Length: 527
Ligand code: G4P
Image (cartoon, rainbow, N blue to C red; front, side):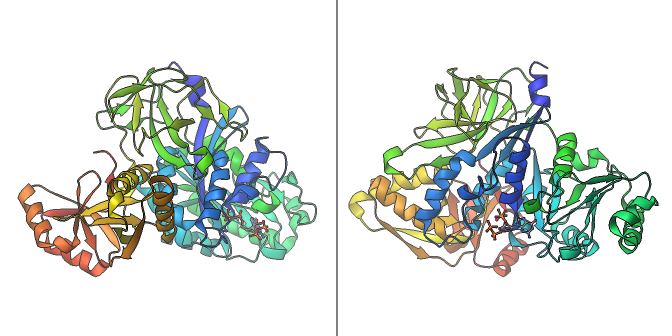
């Protein structure tokens, strides 16, 4: 394999969590370990505050800053780590889903007090769909959290994953004494006052008297009992099971105290998947192939009128990407080259000469790209597995200025290419329906259509809650259904038929009444 060394040392992943569980804090600690930042607090100032009002301009301003943190690349123990940021605000969840298509694994942060929360469920669903290997970090052990066995139960049941404890906590809250590393059989002691990160006690055996001395007889007895139980149930971690997304290694710690983070990072480096081969519309592209290929998973438009640029984020899937080299834009069937591609090493944007599988490259875009676009060294295929998920809010787009119809159409087409929202056209009519994950997106669209395209619009709420993509063996079956259900039928931007359901009840009824039609809950961007 030509670029074997570069491929083998790369780890590309994302941290996901419900807002407030500690994603930003954990990110910051990882960057500190990687030497990418020197002071705590550096990441915090860039994050989209979840307490932000519904003032989307403020969020956009922060999002603008956060372009630099969209990908954080750092070195740790001879590995090159690409940490892809996911927006904390739930209205940008669609962005997060897409980012998950560009990573090889995920670290899921769960708050020990709140357990599994809404966003956690949704994000895990996306991971499960793609069989993404997951490591779970239970955070905030310094607070009075749930019993760890109950937590395991809750996470396994609610998220439908099977956990494998790697460390085990000794109490929580003010009685939190640390964690026992089941793998290395060592004890990491927690001291809330000194916040020491290297207070490790090696014990030869759980019966070792040092254990009683270190954490007291009562807690030592409890730990022995817990560990015996865990070992009996779980045994050793089989890395293959983790890589196949069948088992999720579980760590306990406290991100804000930088406690238990290094244990997780060291394990992550050891077991997390390196960039892997990926499916395309034509064949599986092997990560070790000589020829370059990659796909666009995110487009970031700058709302600042002085810098009206777009950045397309491309994940390299095979070969070597090189600056100033012509590559084939498969959808447009044209060759383009990039004179200023940049990477995100040490959090500053640097022009790069080349990039390898697992890397994310920022490409200046003047409107050539849409989400899911593939670049190659000449071959025609599309990377698959970059699905569109159903929006959650649907509104009719109403043109307020008929003189600007063209501008409105162009604007909405470009914004939907960027992935700001999804566009559906009512079946047999021309009612334009916009679907988003969050209310905020509608504000963004209205603002941008006016500012960038001079088109005024408003929205009228529609009573839909989910979009399902439809397929059937016979075209007539589908046509008849669509005609019959005109009020609920639409086409997506690629002309694919979609059923818009008012409620779960309606959806289930249609599914059971139309056995010869398949209702899909996601759509591939390219088929
Ligand atoms: P997020 O990105 O997932 O939204 O969470 P973030 O890291 O911002 O953490 C949310 C809050 O939880 C922060 O407090 C953070 O300091 C706190 N936190 C993170 N890890 C731990 C932990 O291990 N233990 C405890 N007790 N708290 C933790 P905040 O008050 O919202 O922000 P700040 O004022 O501390 O910046």
